[in-house]
Image (cartoon, rainbow, N blue to C red; front, side, top):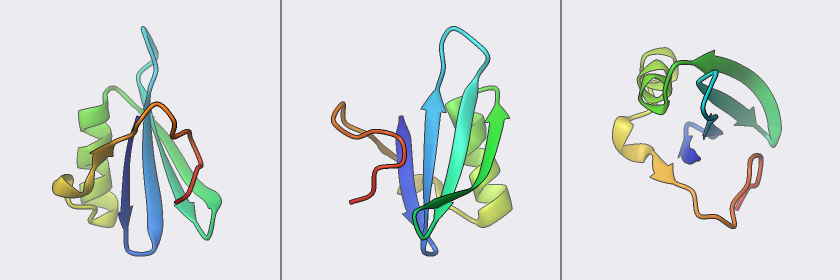
Length: 72
């Protein structure tokens, strides 16, 4: 899983295997407001950059203890 925080939103990417691909989730005020299925984590990062302006260097790989929808 990868995550980023940008512009008061949290973005999370979940890589599924072997298929269908990678999901990107967008949270605002702790609520899921968008989710998309794309082919790869890299495609999700590029999509987030194009759609919401999330810089590529904002993405971090989550530790095993972090889970989807968990907020610091």
